[in-house]
Image (cartoon, rainbow, N blue to C red):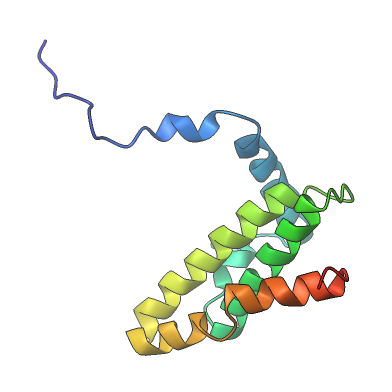
Length: 127
């Protein structure tokens, strides 16, 4: 049998290495219990399609990152970072489908990463 080479092809199975895939799946499972999928099977978070929802995912991702970074163990902040970045990227793709590219750039530029980081650091009295 002759087969094509696998060089330069995405190795999807690599996302299962380490603990995060399971922890992300567990977080999504808990979320689906709290916010059940519609009859269509669409997860609740996939209804997001507005600039405000995009920004909320960004803010939540950064907040959870800082909580993870600071050692907060009140919940699985690392998995929440994965969830919120995925939600942010999903919402951005929906915005690109429904808005002009400049509008999407405007949404992304509303609050720079540096501004977000400074706001979080100020909250924790680091600057």
